[in-house]
Image (cartoon, rainbow, N blue to C red; front, side, top):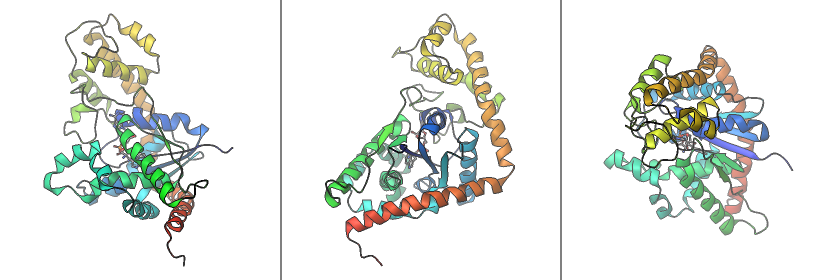
Length: 335
Ligand code: TYM
């Protein structure tokens, strides 16, 4: 049996933060040698809310450099840009025609984002999860490593695949592979620094709410100093009344690479005044190698472009094969 195939992506909007890193990229990197990997930059998804054309390409290259800086190894992963492979948009159209509208109207992310957009909400935003299904199913992925917030989109992807196979496939020869989400319990939902009940998000208007992978040490220090805490002494995991404590201890645990029990023992008697400098130092040290590698990589734009070009060539063959199989199943005339 060949290696299982992994696929995932991030939108090139705003800066990558600790939630993106701990929820998704960290897993991509740590598991990359076990799988055949496809990681892409979801720029078609980035235009589902109003965007600035002047920065889209720049953000795309920045994100590609960050993928590498976080530790993706180009000898084991294919990295590409979604909009450069037209099969994504084409398969999304085919899926549009078999996906019931009410499946999309139920999506939590759509509802949350649509409220912010008001009257201007686009069809693209509603259709966003169908494009995501196309991204995944085109590559016949087995596993999709994502944060907890993508779980519903993954369930929809599975539903679309099953419906397509049922309506247009042969019982023993399904056209599309049904993928599994890969959501690690720890880090799957990193919370905001200003409110431990809200997830850390690129679209939060407050910069203070998140730590970005490219934040300077001074900035990290300031953000952690000001982050929301509580009035209790002694720091403990799993107290539902202390969401900030849970979040900050989890960040410390993941960034220091320690076990939960070691962190629980170390911090049991601590107050915030003692813990915050510890978390600050740990965060700065964990991000330092990523930031250094990122700086080296951004010196040579042509290197990043060459990697994306190579990724495009590798990905395109796989994508075209599935697209053709889907078109054949739907009965289109072949040239
Ligand atoms: P995006 O760009 O919003 O987020 C990228 C990844 O980061 C995870 N994530 C988090 N994990 C833990 N805590 C948080 N606070 C947090 N915030 C974000 C997300 O779950 C995600 O894994 N729709 C996707 C992009 C996409 C995609 C795909 C992903 C498009 N097509 C196909 C997988 C497969 C998105 O918006 O991610």
